[in-house]
Image 1: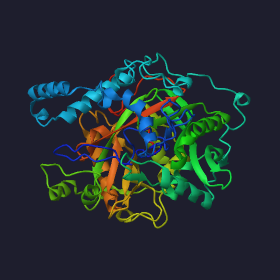
Image 2: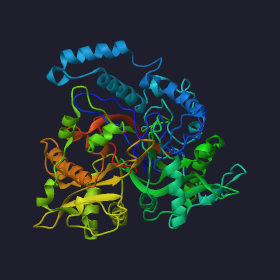
Image 3: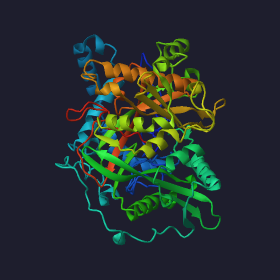
Image 4: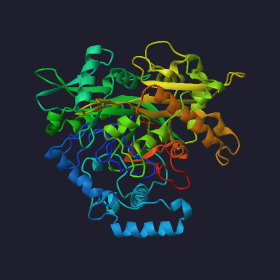
Amino acid sequence: MSEASTSQQKAKEKVKTVEPEPIESSAHADDTEDDTGSEGSEPDDEPEPGAAGSSSATQVNTPGTTSKKKKKKRSKVLKALSALRGGNDAISEDVVKIVLEKVRAEGGEAAANADQETIRMALEQMKLKEVLQGKTGIGGKNKKDTGGHKFWGTQPVPQLGDAPPEADGPIEPSKPREEVRQEPYPLPKEFTWSVIDINDSAQLRELYELLSGHYVEDDDASFRFQYSAEFLSWALKPPGYYQDWHVGVRVASSKKLVAFISAVPITVRVRNSLVNASEVNFLCVHKKLRSKRLAPVLIKEVTRQCHLKGIFQALYTAGVLIPTPVSSCRYYHRCLNIPKLVDVGFTGVPSTMTLARMIRLHKVPDRPRLLGEGLREMEDRDVPQVCDLFGRYMHRFDMAPVFTEDEIRHQFLSGMGEGPRGGQSWKSPRKGQVVWTYVVENPNTHKITDYFSFYSLPSTIIKHHKHNLLNAAYLFYYATETAFEARAEENGRLKRRLEELVGDALIVADNAKFDVLNAMTLMDNVCFLSDLKFGQGDGILNFYLYNWRTAPLAGMTAMDGVPAGKGIGVVML
């Protein structure tokens, strides 16, 4: 969970429009900030807020501000990323031009439309791959050059520039409960710890208001994630959750909730190892209190709480490079409501295209195409079959969650909202609906052969004269029996089936009045993103493992013979 939530969701990304397809902004991760939900760190490399030194799997996201403090915080990150983002050590314009000329000369018809931005992105990805493979530190620098990362240098995480490990396993051994710190970490005297009871509507409302006002924003403060109360309840209460892992900070005198971080348990398979971890999300500190350095204490406290339950490993994400990503994925966006997205600045109209043509090219059919094959909304009776298909399908990826039937029921059904289900439900959403899950049931055998799902994570549109909400959906989990047919990938049958499934997901999302469907370069997404008119964003989400060593996993680039995307099977909220 991501994003960490985001996320990417899990705030708008800065993207450049290329022709002929418009490239949209991500509504899930800012490309210069850690995906952590707070901007509490100064540039002395205390923990990036929410990019947990915690025993957790996170997509914790960082809001932005326009203050001098924000610029100061970013200075070290920007220096470290100079080779990736364009500083003194950036990929030079001359290099880009030379490579572009070579590509156009030797790439044939397929390369005729290549441009400088495409070439630069490719070169950036090559550099990022070197970071993942341990050949170089951030931006091609060594550990000393990048400042050492004071906080992360003390944590059991792979360090930048380290060679890939020869074997998978924990970095530090687990501790017995009696050796774990028993007392909460100290807070400044004006604050006090508070366990947040998500089942209490008043406390849930407090959390919603904190996140709505102070969570993830983009650089221009144009968009901010707006997690609904229903979303928070769905995300924070999976089977086996611990209330103690919903950690809040209140002002001692007024009891006002001013900071929060959460963790939930998760089982994740990393290659051939099953790892009991936790998922951290929603790290958020009130904007006026970010000089109080609450974020590092929140991270340490949720880590302590996880350790008390015997959880010592983590999966988390961040929008910036910190020690040390196990993989990186790029955001893609499928525009649905073109006029609105152009109006709010989420995307632009290419110079070779009119708005009318852009709308026409992105129009989706009125009805799902698989209705005749048995497409319908998932029901409780489908849980055993979906759980079996989920497990087999996700085993095709190097890192993926392992769900029980109760967890499948929670992830795919518990957020379906109030109101009638089945029938023509694809035509409109229900009240409080967070997740949409559809199965394809063979009408003769009653076997579930496919399913797809997506979830809702809107963003507030800040200070726009007309629109106040960006309705964004995020592609969640999907699977198909076609994957297990002989040579299904080689002969293109798997690709075609996934295009049918995700194509219907787009139709359902369009009928539910979503403005955009977002996805990442993970699972099998890479094979269908282009043909389904997803535009490439410039946002990159880095995946991290805490207290666990493993070789890099294929994300937005192939890795050690594994195709792009197939290293990552975890969708972070």
